[in-house]
Length: 334
Length: 281
Image (cartoon, rainbow over all chains, first blue to last red; front, side):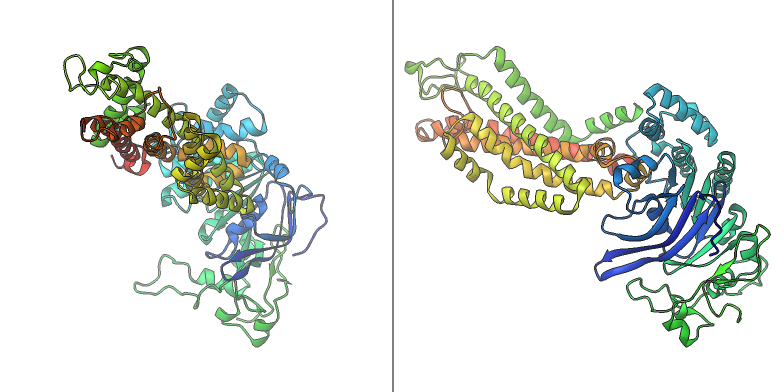
């Protein structure tokens, strides 16, 4: 990815590598992820299960399991997060960077009323008193458009629906106005109609506060309207990265093309089978020396299996001037 | 608040909770009553009246020294409750923090704590109590300490296991993402979520403590005369087995009922406090 030397970006991740211990040895879960995000920018991370999307989010938050080995660099406002001591990380989490979890059903403590859970980061980072924090919790619930917010302050999570709980989660994440918001599949557990509302809400709040958003999803359609820039992940690395309209117009990496081809579309003749990508995600324990996608790729040549792919620049630059990068030497073929 | 009424109503419909609760309540009432009043002073020896059969004056008769059995039972219940409370208190007070620490820190801290509790657990409670009395001499304090020490690994294990399950749930990750440290997550999120397990276990350990105290007193290692204790009443009854068999029945029945009541209460509490069952209605 072209590295423009702007003044310190909101988030600069370079060559982030994570290895995790498993029963069968060390698994290379992330293999050199790099990304750069400015304030107010929204970036989507897409890929299938097990490609390292959620792990990237956890690594950014410093929430990886203790035995994970992390190398590379994560700069938040130029401040190195890799290797930062836990107490300092605690001060950043919830205050400067926040995360919305996938499962609103389980991410709230069933035993506390919701206002207490919203008040938690406020009391922790902004040292608010109980009354002040509760008042602020009400404002936040109004901001995430929870109906009848005042009555619901004292509600317990099981008294709310999935969509309402996710709104509560969002208000917790926003409580201290973080600069970076990470949303890990925030709508996967919700009904389709509710998904749209919640995403629209996140987008609106991100715009209002001008924070950076890293949206993780496996849903291409959802990315199209939500983010400025999309990064496609496969086997622990980013295989393609481009401004959203550019990616949707000129997808270069064979995996990205496969993803698009596998999308169900309206208007197909009855009985048409969906295109699939043959094979399955490789085990992280025995990734090939070369490109992780080589075994499933229709364009793969011998060199792909032996030499790791270099990042290439796709000539076309999006309107926004965002670079379009792809890590595949054979993307011009099709 | 609605929830709490709901849980209470559900509890009152639960047969073993009600039966166990009633028996335990009776036990507690007896102990409290005996603090102020008992039919006869338990220290009163009345040799001419020894081994009397039940009568209007002595409802359960008298023992080999002419003491009133009913009064001895009443006052003896204090002893059982005292041992139960303190021994379970030691177990909760030391075991739970250890288990929570093990669960929050994991790694070698967890290993050390759990192996140490395995080590303690490997000695049967009675054996360690006998060892302690061999060192410090018999007495109530020593037997309470022995039973309490036996309770520590029980609570350490159970709280670590339950806490590990809570730590693996999303809301603890969410709390970490909000910037909370392990201590405040443990206090605010883990402990409330394992409280029901601990309450149930505490009831059961209470019953075990009463049994253990009776056993120790029976062996002459626990409560010392003249303080009445159900275990010692059994011991004294043993020598009069053939003249007055009922002497062993009363304290035996008292112990059995107390233990049964606590176990029933524990079972009932388990059902009442289990959130999965609570949600079914």
